[in-house]
Image (tube, rainbow, N blue to C red):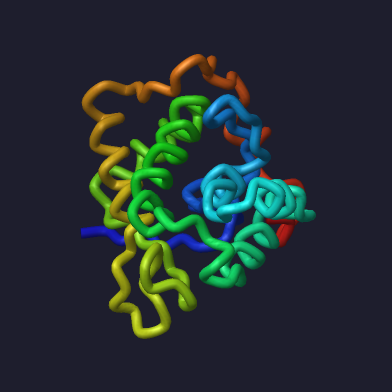
Length: 173
């Protein structure tokens, strides 16, 4: 079985990354990337959430969110983070049909977030992490194969081509 490894928001599989620069509307709010939409719910304080998503890039939002002290994190975060990630991913692929088609085009390949630092969403430094992001993407791919659409309440799909969504320079995400 084929394996597709992705990590950064560049290259042929960069669109699988949450750092991929595609604005999404989630919970009635516009975010510049899926990573921003995901991390926005992590802090217990709304001012901290706003500060996170005002960083210069989604990558820096992720770094800052990972550095939050436990007492700055919403008490229910661990209980809701996987469901939130799934909802964010569904919004991304519902709002960008070109990206949904690319996800479907991965066929039956195993999708692996090749993060060496995250053994929950990725495979971690030893390669035996949970790969929850890859698993969620594969679940969504199967749903898309069956219906070709995902719902994102109240949001119209973007008509942008995949090429217009690609980062303009390497390392921008």
